[in-house]
Image 1 (cartoon, one colour):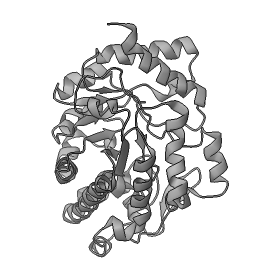
Image 2 (cartoon, rainbow, N blue to C red):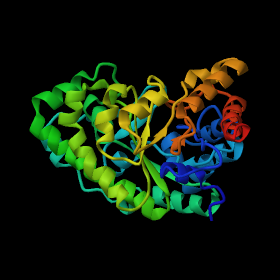
Image 3 (spheres, one colour):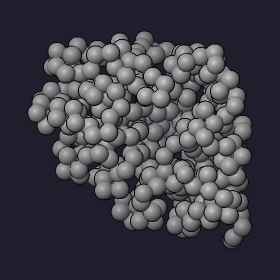
Image 4 (cartoon, one colour):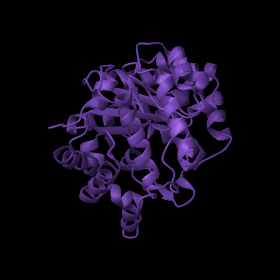
Length: 344
């Protein structure tokens, strides 16, 4: 039984008593307790142990007083479940043993079912919904971001290989994106069926595309994902990094909530996408390191730009950084929760 549903109410643009707040990557290395757990388990091993994964997911909810939990996992988890050999290398990121370079590799990608491929994820969700009194957010990486890692083989700065593949092999690119879209849609729906009350689709690297390329090579494959989740009744959040130039095109997908990074002012982003969406964001993560009076001013500026309109979910414009302090994030939560009750 949820004691606090203001996050879900905001997703649906309903009136709330206070602006809900949660943080992307709100479980992680900034927490001493998490660092102790990582001494025993790798990131992927945490994901594969439901009891441990649930505890990691719960930690920031207890410490910070946020209005939602997000499942602790990694966007590579379902790809590993499909049999792809990918490791999370410390200080590097996902590294694939065999990057996608041929049509035969795309054709060989199997259908996805979470109960068979990643049953531990669904078991973690079932544990969490028994423990939480705030909503649980599930998530997945979007097809373009997943494809970027799969084709490049590892994190990249210029996206040369994936863009070249996209431009030179449009038919095979379409096949890859269709398979990834089917996987992501199925994965998110199964997370909802297991108990998640909302989901977020992360397209972390799509901001590296022009608007024309996004609309040609990416957006068509996003529609079935958003539609599949919306059919469950669970709100869908769509977030990308450095996507100010893509906001209008991304909004055409009709998610319930548009996530906004810190590079675009919140009021300007809301103007671009229109009033029929909730908006999530968008404090510059580095502002959390600022002196207290500067941090308060910047948090207040985001809230002021939201204008107390129904449908604002406070978050960082990207994820929590490992160097942040628990106390600074607690202060952000306190400032956000106090804002609505200071003025009538």
